Image (tube, rainbow, N blue to C red):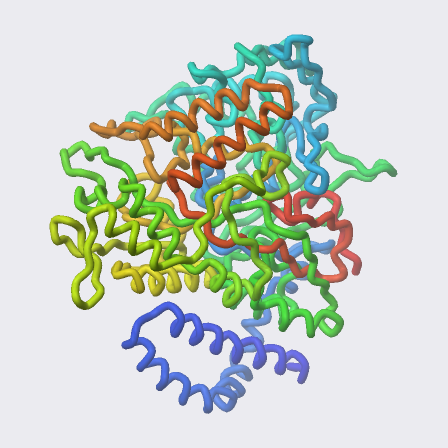
Length: 636
């Protein structure tokens, strides 16, 4: 029999889901959809009657799909229900190019960054020792480490990961730039001393090395016994078999891991279920094996409004753990904290960044066609044009309207929590559309009688802007950018798209004019070398060919990109803290002068969590609010 409470819960959920869907349609589509939506609004008046009838038929099967039913369907034990806006793109760490990923749950690194203090702490390695000249580092692994299949985890796996995978020129992993050293981009010479000790020999001192070895965002250790053979053969495409190994079509139970959780089941577009790794090494002070929580259900919920509805209805335990909670949700949730048995955590400014960038790539594809329309390329590569765009975006209005004043206007590529963050002395681009117009005119652009902007050759200034459609705040920011640029005569063809399609365009086809995206941050500036170094796999605004990609005739870095390369090399080599600060201060000033990216408004680190979840250590520093997930408990 269906209880009144259960029926009301279903009615409440589906009614507000309909409202959220309609709201999403209105906010992201054009006039034609809006007109159709008016019909839908009238239809919603009848929705309660229709839903009551349908609920009597559908409640039973629907109840079997709710996350809180998984415990009775599978195994008894504690359970945590989370969400992500997109499916994982890989189960192979070397192919990871998005956040969040399964590796937050399933793998660990040699060290770990404390999400509260930023200090580097032991993880798989229980200790380490630098030589006096800082050119030799020896890690000592914990004895008795095992992989999830029971095989021993030893120094062989560490050498395999760093030498055979990350340093392999045929493996295009995002992790490379994090440990490339000096002008020659040399890798550490990683050697096994015995089963528990690994030696890193460096060509010169390298200050960021420990941070590169630290989770949750560093280089995870991979299983040699499971993957070594895939590096010895090539597929029909000429690439190593390794690159196509452990895709998301692989049985998740076959993936060998070393972290707190193993994967149990994956249903694309719906959920990924994790369970405790029986061979995980961590124990608490009383000797109890971690993690405490038995199962994690990671739901794929693309729409953030739908995530909110599921959290409010009790179907999720956390919202805002991988991207901060939307500021507009806070007043509503604040009123419901006591009744809903949850608390909003405030970790201060989030460490990531949000920016708009233009495609500055002047290269040609293999067919000889320019990657970017040469007319647009001339605009994008004109500094005055980029500066004018920056002056024309009303970032304070974005903060007031979309972040409820809780955001932080960005002027630096370095996180505010970092000791290298430069608070003063940076060029800023406060809203000034008249200054934007003046810059454009001085650069040879001109206006028609209708206020439309044309270049010196009478080409209408018009370009496309893309962002990921599953982030409503980002979608709304893009709409305001479109309006703001329209005020200085620029026509922006704005199209939010699927996140994975966005990544494919940016990283592979390079078929885009401008895009808006976020990037995770942290204490160590070198952690973003993948974005800022000209060879980086995330250097999207002028992306060079990556391993396995065809050559791009005509690709070349700009002079200021070469300067940034030099600053990152020098900053990594320098061990004196004051001198490092001066180097990264110059980097921040250069970015703001040259504007390869236009920084917008950053989130505030806000996360709503059920009161029954214990052990949280939440701040705005780590990219993941549940960075200490192995220590979390569920109070039943």
